[in-house]
Amino acid sequence: MTDRWSTHDIELLADLVIKRFRSRERGEPEAEWRALTLLAEYAPGLAAHPVHAGLPAEPVIAMSRLPGVPLRGQILDRRQLTAVVEAITALHTAVPARVLEGLALRHGHAAQVVDLVRGWCAEPSFHDLDPGVAEALAAGQEWLELTGDEIAGDPGTPVFGMGDGNLANYLWDGSRIRLVDFEESGRSDRAFELAEVTEHVSAWVDTGLDASALLGHFALTATEARRLRECRRLLALTWLIMLMHDDPDHPRNPPGTVERQAVRLLTHLGRS
Image: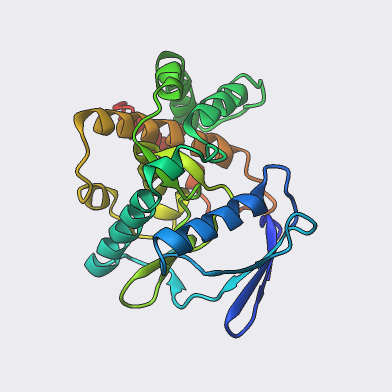
């Protein structure tokens, strides 16, 4: 199964999933296979079990099929929220420090996102904006100029990062969460990864994720808490610009999503 936004094709068999990548420019199949093999060793059961890889000749991976349904589109109850916390904690802490140090940074790490958003902000392509969206974009640009270098230069607390906060990748089987989609995974930092889950559009546009309740389960240091706040601002700005570029003829999200994202960003920036 596939769609126009997907980076891969998926074939679902009775007990096997075959993932065929359309692109490997960023090393997506290699990152996914590395993640599956690492988690099979250090956190068995958290992700699919790696079965076969066609690498390097073919960008094809076969893995076990996991039970469960995606969390996206649901109103998360207490048990599900707890299970999400447990899955994230297991993911972040499973890979030993000595192994983690040798991994490449995940695609879309904090410094990379800062550079990307700065490039977007420099493009003279935003016209006829809703007043609230224009206000949020201007406030975000102002904030980024003041804080971007600090975010990019802070390595944070090292963790193994999934690289995707989409709640469609969190499978609930009634008792626990399992994770799928690791094509952008790699070494990251704790605050940035938590920010990615809470700020991903899937957390609020069609899903009921209580971000404050989720984050309240993590004992962050004062330094981590500050970085989390700034990373949430960065990703809220990132999502605002991405949503502004959404194709109006083929929208991925409900009407009014951009305006709602603008309010989220202004709230994070203390402007609302």
